[in-house]
Structures are given as C-alpha cells and as structure tokens.
Length: 494
Image (cartoon, rainbow, N blue to C red; front, top):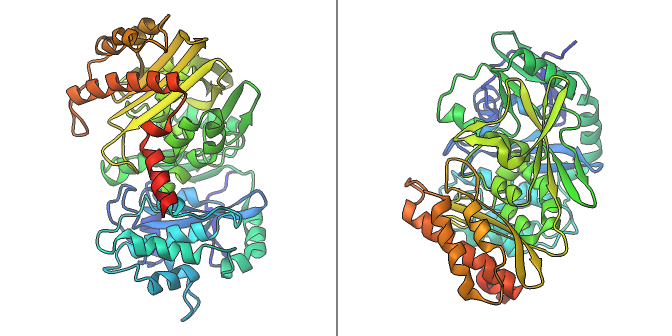
C-alpha cells in the first residue's frame, strides 16, 4: 500500500500533510498554512534568495543542512526531511549566533532579504567544522542571495565571525533527537497523494517508478524542480500529475570507477561536484558557478540533462568527454551517446514512459587535455551566453583527436564537427596553424540573437574560446587567462 501523506520533521516533531494540490510549493505552505511569513517571496524563480529555508537530511551519519529556494520547491519534496525557517532559529529573546552577528555588523537595512540571508548563513554555520572558512567561500554561499541596500561586506563579516567554529546552537544540541526522528520517518513505501486525475507521487523504487510512469507517460517528472518550479510560478502551467524522483532508491548513486564516473539521475549538482572536480578542475569550476548554492543543493545532473536546454552548462562539457546516457522504460534499459540524446530544441530521444537512469562520464587519459569555459553577463548565478568544452588527444605536441561542444550556439548542445576536423594534425607550437579551426566555428553554428547575447557576439566568443583552449593547452597554464585566478589573488591579498 502506498502512503497517502508526506511526513517531515519540524521543530522537533513529526508532521503529516495530505490532500494538497500537486503544484503546492513549500513557500505557499509555510506562508498560507503555517502563517510563517518570515520566509519571503521575491522573484518567485529561485534567483533572489528571499525565500531561502534549510532542509536537513541524514548524510554520512549526521544531519546535513542545505539552503533551498522554497518558492520553486514542491511541498511534497520535503518528505523525510527536517524543515527549518528563520522563525525557528531564535530561542525566546536569545538570537541565533548568525542573527547576532548580523546585528553586530549592521548586516541588514530594509530587512526584506535578511531572512533568506540568515538561512543561507545558517547552513554555512552547520557545514563541516574542519572546513577552511574564507571570504571567497562565504561569497559563494551568498551568491544566491540578493541584497540591494546593505551591501555584502558587513554580511560577509558577520558570516566570518559567526561561522568560524563548530556549531553549538540548539540544532547541534538536538542532533541525536533529530537523527532518530528522521530515521523513524524513513520507509520504503511508495508515496501517492490524490487520484488518477491529479496526484503527487514519489515512488520508492525504480520498479515502482517504471510502472507508474508507464501508466502515466504524460505525468511531469520532477527531480530538483529548479526548472519545473518556474513552469508553475512563472508559466502558470497546469501540472496535475507530478512524479518526484527524490525517493527512488538507487537513482542517487555515484560510482567512481577507474575509467569512468557514473552519476545517478537524482544526484544533485552539489553531490556531483567532488567527482567531476577530480576528473578535471575546469569541471569543478563550472559546477561552482552552476546557479547558486540553493540551486546546486536541489538541481540534479539527470534533470539538467533531461531538461534538454540549449543553454544548460553541463551537457556540452559531458558531450566533450564522450559521456553516455542510460535510459529505462518498463523493464528495458538502453545506453546512448549523450550527444545523440538531443534531437531538436526541447526535444530529446526519450520514449513515452522512459526516464534517465544515469550518466557515465569517461575519465581523461594521460595524453588528453580538457578545457571548459562559461561566458555570462554576471560571473556568479547567471545563465551562459556561450559555454564551450574542449577535449584534445595529444601525440606529443600534436593534436590527433578533438571533441568540442558548445552550449548557447544552437537549439541543442552541439558538437563542432568542422572545428574538430580542422584541428587534426595541428601543432600546439604553431599558433599560426590554428586559424583554420577558428574559422571553422562559423561553419558549425549559426547562433541566434536573444536577450542574453547577439549572434555576432556568440560567434566571436566561440571563435576566441577555440584560441583560448589551444593557448592554455599549449602552455599548460590557466591562471593568467582566468578571472577566477585574479579573484583568488585578490582574496589572498586581503
């Protein structure tokens, strides 16, 4: 029998909620049902951070708190988690250490953004006590929280003061009770709330997911809801059948093999970071700039691929690495090259009732070099105008094979086949021979104009990125050509 109510931990007590509309967001539940209005609605699309709350889940034997955008998270997605809002932090007149530091450093003026900022810093406060807390790390944590009147310096100063040591708040003191409570909430039951016409479902196994999705191939699959959430809040989409993948056992696995990294479909960007970083530092930097901490905590690798966005950052990088995709439909599975999954704009090679199971990413060999670049108007928390990824196989100083993929240059993430062919036999020691490959980009893509960039800008940037990738591979150095290198230098100087 499927369970017909979600269960979550709230203020030291288990809570059950049933009978809600599948499109109900966590923000609406908190503000309209609990009347906890400290959590604000700002942009309603997960960009400003005013709605940030913390979700706690058991990982590696402890409660790990992550920042979440409540405005685009479905209420059903909190099943099995602890929900913490800004009202929960203070104990009577005693402020939480993060709140006290914000007051002491004058980190709030109008106050609208302050609850979300406090909750982001609350999750930072509960990170590994052995972390190296730096101004740069705090900036990353706050990249998803917009503040227009205070300025970030006093907020960062408050974070550096409050989060320097091990957590000692009431949540840390209650951790054993919380772990017991969350453990008791965990079960292997399928979750189904509603009826055949309108439901929120969360299968507990792949078999249950395959069966349910075969019965309702028109249902909307939800993983992190960082994109589907906008369909609801901005597009006012009538999504009456929702299947959340977050409880499916096994879809969150990460297998780090000798030759490849296999990432389950529901592995979040935050969870995938370490494995991708180990393949190449450029993948790590790409993931660090992937949305915000809130987006990385919710959004999944499989969701980013299945979404099929032409401007998704991850797909071009994985295509350049020759990744393969595993799909399942009913009892059958199949594997296809990731590049073949994308057919046309928002159209993928996915049959009715078929879902993404995992992505297999080959690791680089000793004679291979990899580079990835994200070009956007803002450095942090922005969608790419152009994203380019390059993998070169070398014989000494000569390129013998090239795989290049771009995002933002076509209706799908697409390989640059003409550019690849022009690079075969090119010497890294002869920059004058790179011109043909740079010119070939114009034959590979006819980019469109939109509000992010003009076609001419995109064409020029893509051409220049070919030169940049070759220059860095030739020299073996990246820091002099990277903005991130300059940021690290400035941070060290402080």
